Length: 121
Image 1 (cartoon, rainbow, N blue to C red):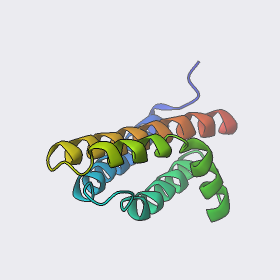
Image 2 (cartoon, helix red, strand yellow):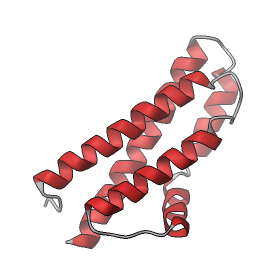
Image 3 (cartoon, one colour):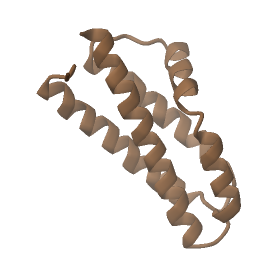
């Protein structure tokens, strides 16, 4: 059963893919400095969450969006481990860090978009 309208789905695609692309750029650019990208990825992901909430008419406070991000971002620990293991290798580290940052942002976005769609239905 689909909880999203076509318009909502298109809006979510735009928001989530834009955030994931930006996350990849951040991850690639800061790969050689372990955990440095968290300072930029967190506000990016918070903005994505707030935007997704607006798609479904769900108004989130900053603290609520932080809680949603915290519950969805348990995999950030795994990303940090990968970054420490291979992030320091130029080229390889940049690609791996970009891919994991984008994939995690994408996963968080779709998980929350689905949740918001169910709440709004």
